[in-house]
Image (cartoon, rainbow over all chains, first blue to last red; front, side, top):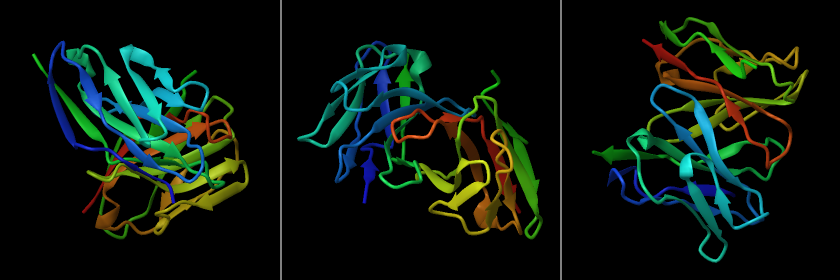
Length: 114
Length: 113
């Protein structure tokens, strides 16, 4: 069965500091992986996705993620945090069955300190 | 494009009441789905549809019904609301395929007393 684990329910960084949000996946087949962001009282918005074309994926708002098969990881990074990055971030893997469902991690709330 | 729209934004029900959460998309997506979001649990799939007239159960379908008579609309019905159904509900749509981005609506926050 596929699953996603996000380490750290809360991550706090200073404005201008590196953002690192961790995601590990479990999948018996090559996965399709996604990072979504949820701002307060809003729906989810796609940040980036991995579909096997390139291991380093660049997304919106300066975020990027690197797919590492040997580590079964897909960590999200941003070199310099901005106050507007404060939100909840979800890592997800696309299910192998016919439901096309996304299997989500439990989410990481990013706090940015001024 | 309006994208994915959901109504209502907020709803309070009493135990045993029924209601329908509305979802519509204007992107001609074949695939539509309903998730519920609970603290610390991410999002979990309730029901999904791969096209008009075709629906199937997700991982937490009990207490919910769906139908898909048109490509655009995918309503979620709560038959007899229970406090355990207090949650935030999101509708999503996409083109078919595991690699496609799913577009999410703004959500409906439901409280069952």
